[in-house]
Image (cartoon, rainbow, N blue to C red; front, top):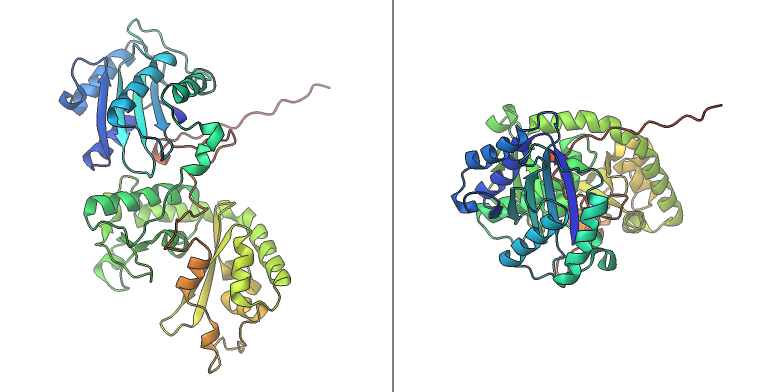
Length: 422
């Protein structure tokens, strides 16, 4: 079991997040502990007011909301009754047993997990200290619960490595809005916030590895002109097979307008990592000299860099994008320099002769691999177990995984370096 603790100043933000999941049928309210009614009988207003009655007793405590997620190994058999028992024991042992708290079971990931919402303001107005709560009380409670309930131990099984986002399989997609939307939302919730991409093309280079595509529509269409954006599930050949879902319908609001703000920010953030990709490309071409484009793709994959090729309907390669899963950075080939564009890579990998005008000579198109083949060579084959390396949920230096949704994260202040006195 992995426990993640997040504190917040905004009760409405945390509650809205969980309640929105319930409305979208991506979560269910399991328990309302120390409330006057059961969870099913409480309205959103009832929940907010119950917490606010306590928080109003201590106006000096601005950070007064506790938001916990308890995450279990996919092999753990935990029904709703067991999850409620675990939540009660956990809250008791971290010192929140007498506090009102809500428990939600989320269904938006490939592993069982619950979210718990509470406040640290007690009935007398005093507050429960949340300093080092995760390191001390929570860690002790987690280990005890793993033993008592026979759960997979995080440190033994490296749970943070096991709980990964499973890519959407076109063969297994259920054609219903709820399941399709949940699957797409699961991918977007991690990719959009973790990777540094500076265009829709670069974002799609990552999404397509998971059979998802962001689509603006055809140029000149009403949707394109109005800046609309939809998301679709793709089949194994990269063709849309699901109804389009509007970007504005997802909770994280991955609309074109919001993405464009991230494009500008990511353009600056990813620049320091271009050097690593250029170095890896140069080394791969030197090491795999004459082995062709497939050898080049395979060599970069060993460096945790996926090569995504773009071709036209005639099979002519016209673009190349590099997805570095180590630094979470995405670069279009030409942005790295002239020697890293699609044309230059073809020449350097010795896969075909490309004249100065950039057009292929007759008979040379057969040497250019299809995009689908390159993508499949960079991941596990569709017919077997699929575990892509890029979407481990936000690894932290402590060896655990950050399961806090990016909408609820707070920016951490940098620590001031102590100066040594002369």
